Image (tube, rainbow, N blue to C red; front, side, top):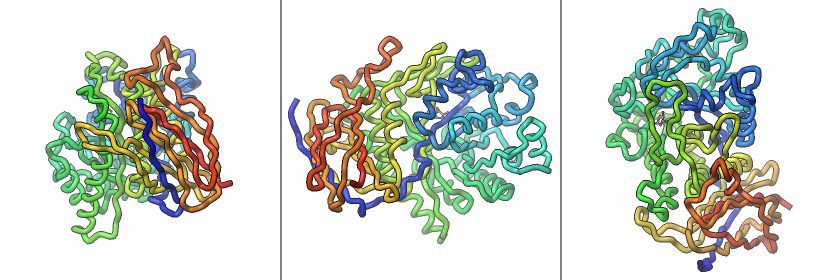
Length: 499
Ligand code: AHR
């Protein structure tokens, strides 16, 4: 281990953008054990009167999710929302084709709304653009958002929900570029269908905001032409373009994996360029922003087909330290790109590719759980354009990359802020000066750090708290400068306060 040194230069006047609270969203899909045995388990000792697991609700509240996307995912493209409303004993059991599972429909749209209320998150609903029709999409908006006096809103009332759900965010389909998607379409076909669906949905309720399916990831052969073509078809009717990406360390090349932020930024930059191109081409005054509404680490190869069983164990990844450090970088990228990125949803919030797992009545939190909670609890106000002067580490995939990955925030209203730093070196600690160039009298408050010697270390059911973000003593600020030692393989959060 050797010692490197670096500087992080901050200035409250050098801002990137207001941080959209919706960057701290999550995703619930009818897949594996996310819904059943995840958020909803009436037989659990933890179940409340609605059958929701209170231990899971508490964990989700600690993460302060601001929005939850539902009901899929690939599941969405075969879903008839009518299956999931009305008396539970009359809801159909169906073969679910995306994950080859049995869907009991005991949890549906209204139960989801109750769940969102309990964790104080805004619902983000998807409409089926695969096997579904424009009419069914419109009817769901009517069912959810019309106060009363129409067939669909009266049906909602008859199901026990007199007040409208007022769902503001609507995903018009899911990953429609993917040949694996039920009802997959070509870009121009999807763009035209999504345009007409969004048009009618907004006629039904002009206050809603709509999200167009972008490419499923940046490795798709149709990327980024898909995004351009779909946007050209639907521009004026959409508020956001979706991005999805799952990162992984398949080649066990940890140095490159720990530099994943390079790829995340590049993905955003390309789509930002695409948005600008289409806006200019359309001579439009309307803006479309990015919604990274599926993101997570996912590569460990667990099964994806449920053999037609209920709530099968699918994609239940166990996350280690290096995965958590990639999550830290991802969140840093969200803040650094907050001028164009306005929504992000971690996929998924429990059991499926999640940092939170249930087993019987027990709960396991992976190290990335802590990283997300630290950022979602403290990133407020404006994202700052932090200037980082740091030595580089060499990576096979991305060349030379700065050893530190940094984001910073400042909320002028409260005078509070935060700095989030990943030291991606596997061997070297970095003696880092934090310098406030605006000359403000700043104090550091809370310090938390997740660190370890082994990138593959993880929490297990036997040792559930091996890797937790620990409190650290925040250094003193003298003459607008503080110095902190950042260990290798670490994520550090420091809160700042105007003195
Ligand atoms: O989140 C799991 C799956 O990943 C989603 O269903 C799909 O949209 C994506 O491919």
